Length: 283
Image (cartoon, rainbow, N blue to C red; front, side):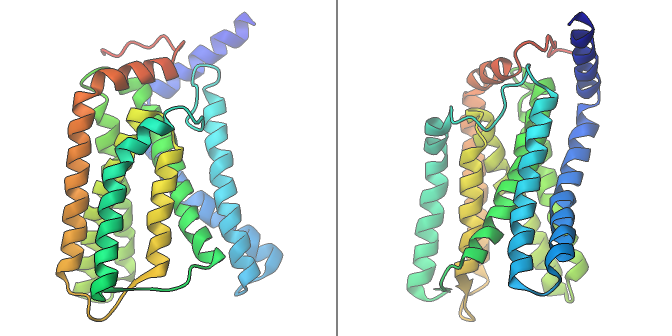
């Protein structure tokens, strides 16, 4: 037992010493691993260009993300209490409320004036929304934020995981530049990157203050799913995108202010979640 404890301590010290690098590697791996592995397995079993293969790919990508998250949490067992427990959901719903209200009202206005149209939501559309909704939350919040909070959970330092993961979450969307065929599409990709950074900040704050991954999974899935059943029409002006980005930025700033005022609670929460590691926050 003593030998096992020494191995756990050594393993965790290594993970903490290189937490920034490890968090970056985890995010990079989890961006591609579930999608690539899920696609390859589905194609191997069901062939290409079939609805069955697409369903299989989406389900496999979600399952692989879940398994990877469970492995991550098991790696730090018993010190880490995990992110999939329901505790904190009630509090996080309060944090999500302004975000939900803004997006529901804003989308409803766009529908009423004809800027977007509503199309039927299919099961495949839901899975397309759930795949990044769970996969990206597992990678960026469930793994990267949680890991960095192990090191930076002290008061006035727990903003570091929020900022770093949010910026990287936005930067990953720059990969869409490879498909941009015009200067307009390049600009749209840059705008999408800025939007994703603020959206990632919202998710990171909610996760850090609540300690539960489920609210951000639900919020992320709901937004991505909405993009499949709420389509922009030709009459949608350019300023609609500006309002969407600006509104999301304001929400992110408001939540950061809330986070700043709740830093003591966040520190206590993550000290408890990482209980038993014996880490010292001041380096």
